[in-house]
Length: 148
Image (cartoon, rainbow, N blue to C red; front, side):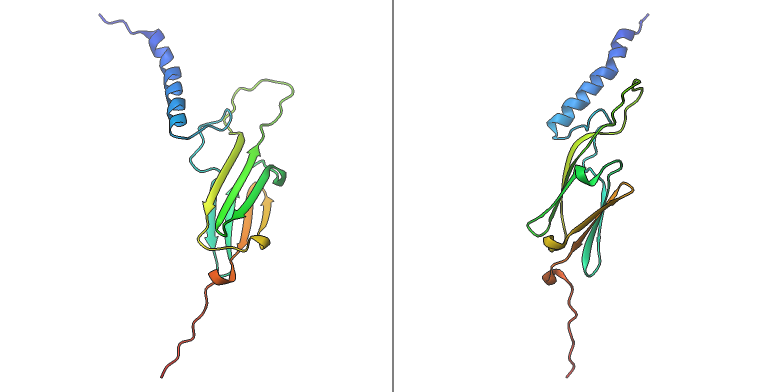
């Protein structure tokens, strides 16, 4: 009769965790701190536009503007960089730590050229809102139609 190898099964989880970490490293992915494996795009964001501006909203709970750097380059490249710092626990022990911490960087290609000198950013309730005015040449123009 076959007797299960419980010690081997107990090590299976640790082996799979090492395998996942090695695969992430080979594929260029990384974890943020002690939290779960980072998604391919952090922070998650929404991008939309109207006739005058592009708008970006990014979820950054627990962060302050001092923790962020925002750049516009090449007229249509938005870069968000920052660091999410773990809370300092003076007394007590961690029982679970699932939220990700550490540095992040994300570059998004914008659908239009923007006026980098007039970009505005606001952080409220963990949501970063960036207003990016379009350059004049990127704004839609109404064309008059003549009839003959």
